[in-house]
Amino acid sequence: MKFLSIYILSLAFLLSVRGNNTPIRFHTLSISNGLSQNSVIDIVQDSTGYIWFATQDGLNRYDGHQFKYYEKYFWDYTQPKKILLGSLMVDSHGALWILSDTGILEHYVAEIDTFEPKKVSDFPKIKLCFFQN
Image (cartoon, rainbow, N blue to C red; front, side, top):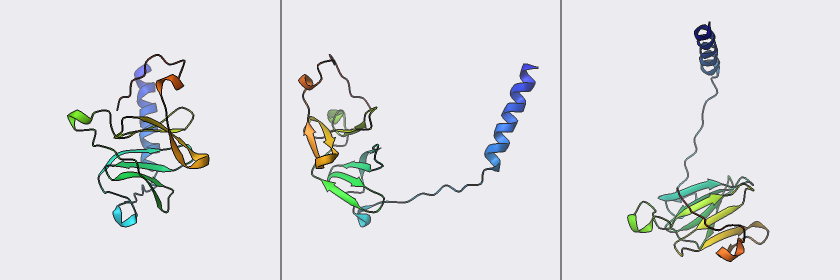
């Protein structure tokens, strides 16, 4: 009986997925659209909907129509010596954090459209923090 229930649920799921013919659309972005470099190191979407692209030529914010460039540079973190440099992160509150080639953790402040460097002393409740891809 248990096997029959699982079989029926699986069949119903497969039929519902197969019946959904909604096409998936992709949009390619490149330097011709304003991206600073075609080789992207990291991508995140923040809570406001912006998509952020980290490249070796700078940080790019995409609003769905155009790019805005920020002078924040990122090394390719697939290189063994650059393992921690080149990260974009969004926290549980939707805030953007970056770890660029300076090795300094920075927080994006949307109200003034800039990045604020942070120190470990700014986080009194955190004793140890690891960044991992």
